[in-house]
Image (cartoon, rainbow, N blue to C red):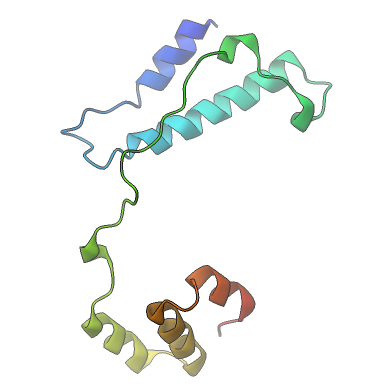
Length: 119
C-alpha cells in the first residue's frame, strides 16, 4: 500500500458543494483519516505505547480539513415555543427543570444532564 492509495481512498469521501452544501463530508474524511493514521502508527511501531508512537512516513502531509460552517444547525432545527409547551406538558418534573434551565441559556444541556439523573 502506498501513500497514493491512502489519498485515493480518502478522496472518495470528498463531495461537491452541490451535493453537500453543509460540508458533512469533511467530518467523515477526517474520521477516516484518523483511523488510517492510527492503524499505520500501530503497524509501523506495534511495541510502543499508542501515545508515544510517531506519525508514520506514509501519513506525512495528508491534510485534515476544517468545515466552513461554524455550526451545522439551522434556526429551524431549534425548538419552537410550541415544541417547548408540548414537551413541558408531558415530561416528568425533573425534565421540566432541565428544559427550562437549558432554554434559558444559564446552563449548557451537557452540564445539566451530567449532574442530574433524569428519570
